[in-house]
Length: 205
Image (cartoon, rainbow, N blue to C red; front, side):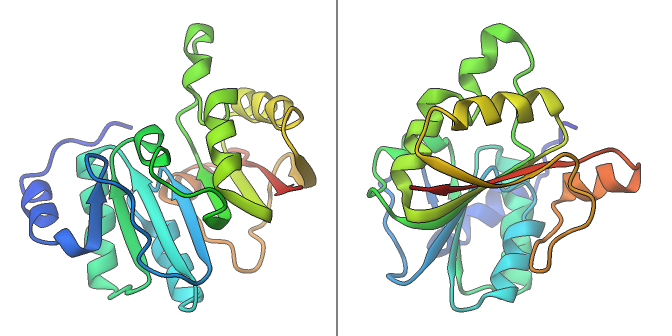
């Protein structure tokens, strides 16, 4: 579901430099307490909902598509979420300047499945990216992934087995949202069509 460019997207981003960081700049934490990271935040429903539920936690969201990012920024501003900072660009670049063990929870929500075999190394749960993600998680931190793509889900389970995770939940499918979970835009779309969602939760050991 490709989103058309919006004329207001880049001006909105330019007008709010204090609320975001681009991947041409080093990552700097805005808060020294508990922090969570969503990689691929889409239009921001999930991160805004989480931030409203947990005002004591600081949330960072990464999105590389400029127009999609602008929708998320607009929601953060409209809801006055002071505990959210957005990162525009590529996770791989940001990870280079992020300190190890920076986050208590990392969310992967409906990541690009890169379905062709030759593109599997680009998946967020391919070994290279999963190594970066694991480095950023605190000991005992949670990695939570939701997807509608069964192939990506099974791929992820195999890759997680290569890393120091205790898998505490595998939902095949994930029928009813847990208390405190938030639907993403994609998740709502698929649930309304009765299409299955899959979820895995791992704890870093």
